[in-house]
Amino acid sequence: MSEKKTAKKTPAKKTTTKKSTASKKTPAQKTEATVGESSVIYIDYTAKIQDDGQVFDTTIEDVAREHGTYKENDRYEPMLVAIGWNWLLGAVEEELVGLKVGDSKTVAVPPEKGAGTRDPRKVKMIPKVKLAKHGVRMLKGEEITFGDERGVITAVLGRQVRVDFNSPLADKTLVFDVTIKEILSSDEEKLQAIVKRRVPGLPQEDFKVSYAKKTITIEMPKETRYVQNIQYAEIGIAADALKVVPDSKEVKLVVTFERPPKTENVT
Image 1 (cartoon, helix red, strand yellow):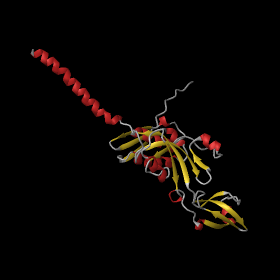
Image 2: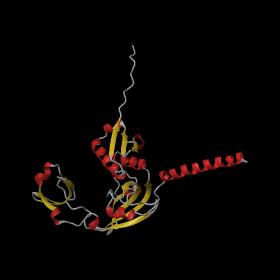
Image 3: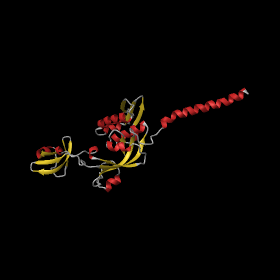
């Protein structure tokens, strides 16, 4: 009788152990079903002016071509957004909380939460000689950069040019049609995504990311050394990484150069 009791107890202990192990793994496999206040997501959107329906920005190539806003060098693909960090307009980001993948929403943004209201002080008269030094073409409608400001020439008057440095979208209510394409859950997914955002020209899989002991490590392929202004991209990657993994304390960007194989002299 005692042998039979012992045989019955043994499998019961094993079953209990398995259940305990499975329950511990569950949180690590958790995914985000809806957009939260600190989610990292991919969206498609089309932005237009409410008054006339003019499209001024979109992530969708077909829409850009249809509305005459297509630009050869632009990338038409879902945009990465970290909710709360104003990578998109804050007024739009906050309206996405609670949505699921596949959900769409139309958000109207008033001027005070968008491009602002027109400021008469931003319309300036600039001598032609000053603009000429910057290689500016003195033509009405020409978009220019002067100092750290961007503006549009609205009139050429004798020796001076009138330039409007207000945003073309000032005083406009903007409408965003947004669709949630993906919600990123793991730290690795988020880190890979921010690398792609800053260095879109190289394959995402060439960058290896890891997170341990509050340290983010991003292994950069040596090809990044040939990317123009890569040092600024790296600063951006580090800043973004600390945002999307809020528990992290530091970021390490690592580039490894291997010793080339020896070549045998052929005589």
